[in-house]
Image (cartoon, rainbow, N blue to C red; front, side):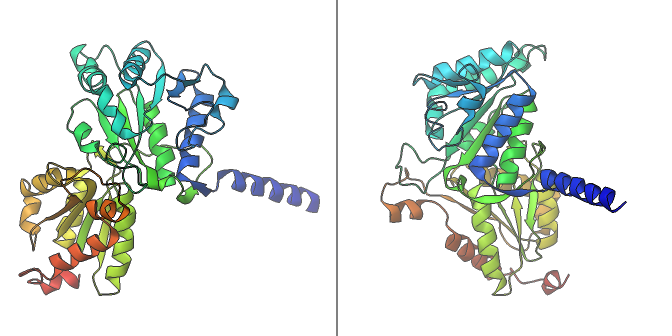
Length: 358
């Protein structure tokens, strides 16, 4: 009996080790998702510039070429328009392509295929055709890559019916959203912030999905709601901890998905906190913050506000090369702290003291 018990304990321990989350980097989590999807479905393949021999411009694809071979991890010529067209064609014929655009800025060269073809085909064919393709887009500032390699263009694509747009902020969501995107019968664009690739977090080893279109409440609070995505969620959480020292209890919502957008989660939070700050790296003008602000203004949530909605976004300038100017062009942690303090100390912002005691 003792031997049997020891054997059972060893077996349970092995199972726990195989199922419990372990720390992975954001890049490693994406690679694991790609490997698991390719192992499970021979229709899934990865292609793009330098994804094979080089292992990806940011090292994300790593050893996938060695593991799956050159027919499923394909190095391509430098032609984003052609690559996007090939992805659309492959998806229409039953494959599940995952296209990596080396820098998200270069997706501008593929706009016709993504916006006029991939986004519209299912609608134009009355649902008889689908385009199950994924486009991975490393984006964002902070690496000194200057104006043509540092943009945040996700709001462009969130404007287009027929496209889904996600922005994971954690390694856990990077894996789960990618696997959900590969399963989806619609084209999904995943914007991966370059500064997040080396960040680490707990990731379960088994395949799992994070549903597209669901936001996550990363921190609960009672005084103000901060809504962000991608690296802005990380900065908002850091800002919230600093604000807590000043007695301001901020709730932080990670959008995760820009289209579809989880408005009910945002609305429920604003009804509780009565204040809203929306922060995003993309240019403030016509950005996702404007859309969320309008959605609040057009709903009955508007009457719950104790102060005006505040948007914090990128400056109306190309991203500079100079490191100090680059930081000044997009919201940083201190900018979020300052914006929240302005909201909390605005005239009328503390009219209802009972809000802070509930």
